Amino acid sequence: MHLYVIPWDVNPEIFRIGSFAIRWYGLLFASSFLFGYIIMLKIFRNENLTEALLDKLTIYMAVGTIVGARLGHCFFYEPAYYLAHPLEIFMTWKGGLASHGAAIGILIAIWLFCRKEKKEYTWVIDRIAIVVALSGFFIRMGNLMNSEIYGVETTLPWGFVFLRNGETAPKHPTQIYEALSYLAIFLLLLWIYWRKKGEYIQGTLISLTCILIFVARFFIEFLKEDQVAFEAGMKLNMGQLLSIPFILLGLVWLFYSLKKKKRAVIKRK
Image 1: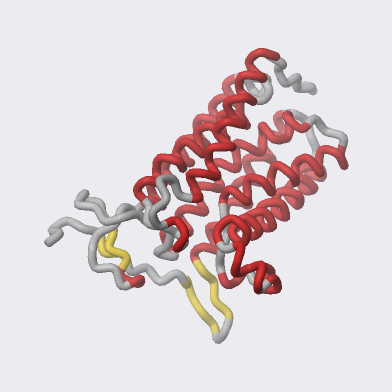
Image 2: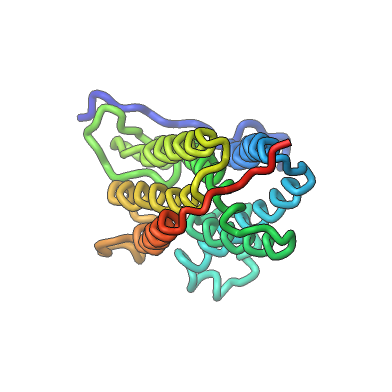
């Protein structure tokens, strides 16, 4: 019998009027863009860039994140089902977003933005990396409010019993583990940026983001329950396998950036 546990029975809906409902996940997901925009606005003002340019970047980011996350879930975790039911790919209200897919979507969206606006790719993606880490915090807290993506059984005193899912034993609240990891990474990246007022070695922020976020994800995955049936019996689950390329990309990017030692130059007024 577990004497010290945290019963978790939060309603994922904040309120409902007829068929219309506001959910915690949606609110937190939207908050990631709102706070991300506020932080990016401060960065843009520090570098004497226009809000109009930031607005364009935000649109690219939003589309890249949502499309990438949805396609990532469909084709990384349930490809057979969605290939057999392709129209359901567009039914995002049924749930199913993957952070690895979002990462790929963001990388592609920023590339398209840079081509359109004739901006340097590394310069843009470095600054986006700061708010991506913060977004990860909000999204994982949304998963907590949905009582989803949690861990295996634990005897630790902070184990959560996810009552809405019919659980009776305490499980690792891996959503909180990830959320706090991403929040710490966000604070580190923000500190690096402002310590030099934006004039740091380019490429270090995005490379550290890839390394730290996906290393954290890789190890926390050992505590998670399988997300899909085919992960049963796998030594490394899909989340871990997808994390490895991003970690390697980050290491290569960091090595290249430190070797090149190109610093961002900001035009002051």
